[in-house]
Figure (cartoon, rainbow, N blue to C red):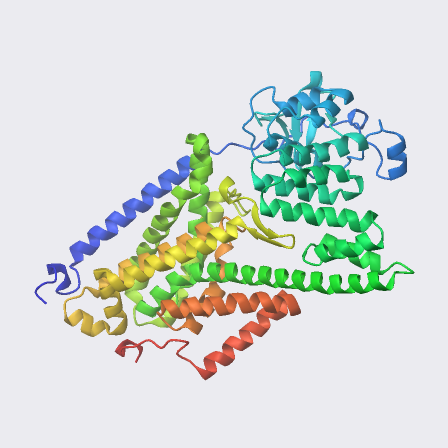
Length: 599
C-alpha cells in the first residue's frame, strides 16, 4: 500500500485530530457569531395596534343583506367585517401605481379603470387578491394602506409598518357592479396577454362566472386563438354555455365535448341536469355517458395527484434518511440527534433569509440558492463536533451512544429555543417556487413539491457518485464492510468516521433546507421525521443507499394511499405493523450489507 499517503498508514496522530477539532470549534464559533449578527438585524415587528379602527369609519354592509337587495342598491357596499386577512406578496410598484389610483378614484373612475386597466396584469391580480382578502384600506386624502390579520397597518406600496392610524381609515369595498367589472376586467386583460398561460387563466376566471358571461366574448376569443391549450379551454367553456342555454339537440352536441373534460364544475352541471324532471330520453342517455366519462377522468387525475403527493413525501423521507443510512451503516450508531441536525439545516436557511433581507434586499428571492451550501456546512461541522466529542469515546457501547445522542438532541432543541424562541419561525417561499403547475382542471402540482423531488434526485446522484467513484467513497465502503481489514491496509478509520459522520449530518442539513419550503420551522421539526427516517434505513438495509431509495418510495406512497382510505392515524399504525412484519421476515432489510462488519 505504498501508494497511500502517509496519514493512511494507521489512525491519524493525536496532533492531527486536535487540529481538526480546533478548526471545527472555530468554525462553530464563527457560525454563532454570524447567526447572532443576522438575528440582531431582523426587522422588529411592532405588535402595536395603534388607534383602533372605529366602526363608524368602515364602509361595510351587513352579511345578512340578501343578494337581491344588493342588486337593487348598486351603491350599497358588500359585507367586509372579517378581520382575518393575509398580507400579499411584496409589491415592487412605484408611487402612484394603478392600485393607488383605483383606491383614490370614485365609483365612475373605478369602473372606467376596470374596463381599461392602466397597469400590468400582475398589478390587477394583486388588486383582486387584496380585495378578496379584505386587506385594502383608504386613509386621509386617498392614501392606500394594507391591514393584516394581526391588526398591523402597512403603508402602500412601501409596505412599511406604521402605528399612526388615520382617523378616517376605511376599507375598500365594491358594489356588485364594480365586483363584476373587476372579475371581467381581470379576464379581459389576461385574454389580451401574449402568454398562453395567462389566457388559460382568463378562461378559468370566465368559467367561474359563467352566469354573467357574454357568449359573444367567447366566440370572438376562440376565432382569434391559435394556441391549442387555450382553444381546448375555450371550446369547453363554449360547450358549457351551449349546454346551459341551448335546446336538446344543442345540449347533446355540447355533451360530446364536455365528456372529454375532467372539470368538477362540468360534473356539477351534468348532475344538476340529471336531477331535473321530464328529461328527454336521448338527452338523459347522453348525460349518463358524459357523467361516467367525466367521473373516470376526475378519478384518474385525483389518483395521479395522490401518487405525486406520495412521491414528494418519499423524497422528503429519503432526504431525511440518506445521512442516517451512511452514519448508521458505517458506525453502527443509533444517532438520536439526527432529527435535530435536520432542524439545524432549517434554521440555517432561516438565518440566510434574514441576512439577505438585511443586507441584500434586492436579491432576497435567491436566498435559497445560498442557503443550500450553508445548511450543509453548518450541519456537517456540528455533526463532526458531535462525533469527535460525544460518539468517538463510546464506540462499541451502543446503549451509551444512544443515550448520549438523545441527550445531545435535547441540548440542541433547548439551544434553539433559547436563541430563536419556542415559536415557529417564518421561512418564506421564494417567488420562483410559489404557485403550481395546472395539468388539468382537477390536477394541480405545486412548484415547491416538484422542486423537492428534483433536488432529491440531484442529491442522490451526487451521493452515489461520491461513494462509488471517488477515493473517499472507496474508503467509506471499505470501513463499512470490514473496519479491521481497512485499518490493516492503511486506511485511517477514525478520520473516515469523522468525515462520513459529517457527510451524513450535512445531508440532514440539506433535508432541513428543503423542509423549510414546505412546512413549519420550529424546535420540534426533527422529531417529526426521525422515526420515519429510521424506518427507511431499517427497511432498506443498513448502509444501503438504494435500499433507502426503495424503502422511502414504498413507505411514502403506501402511507399516502392508506391515509386516503383510513385516515392519518390508522394509516401510521397499519404502516408500523407492516414494517414490523417485514423485519420479522427479513431482518437484514431489502438489501443485506456485505462484509464481516455485520457479523
